[in-house]
Length: 222
Image (tube, rainbow, N blue to C red; front, side):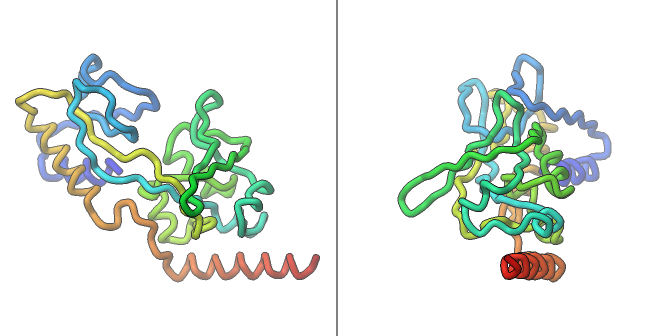
């Protein structure tokens, strides 16, 4: 999410130096002297300015290789027979996934032998055929478009993740460098394609057809 914005920023301002830190913890923006932070959580610190960047829909994905080997789930009940790559560590694993069914919100619990505490590492692990994962669309959209991943249970109305915010210290005179970064990240996340599930290209369509054909053959042979 941040890389395209940073690339444009340093291209437009050659004299600017950027220090990017990726932390899987709740940093103290003021105490640790950060200029700004991008967080996927609802604001809860009144000392910070929080600007919403985008909603954060969820999508369940797996690689074509995984689905070819284990079959494509057709129902939530089918998920019990599958492996999952779960975001988080043992003490805070996100293994309970929520979805809408009519007017109700229901949950199902997944199990997996691999837990990952970084979104892009989660993506790569799933692309390597290690299981099914729940990802934000902004992380998996390119892989879905290219056919490297396939959406699982596309008709399931999954609950979204918390919205994405940029947060920075509340002060009247915002440094120009911080304002420039915020303007770039806002512009990038306001693109229509940022957090939408893309329509797959021909490659992914062929993958879906081949997976469905394999499942049909396997079912017919039982």
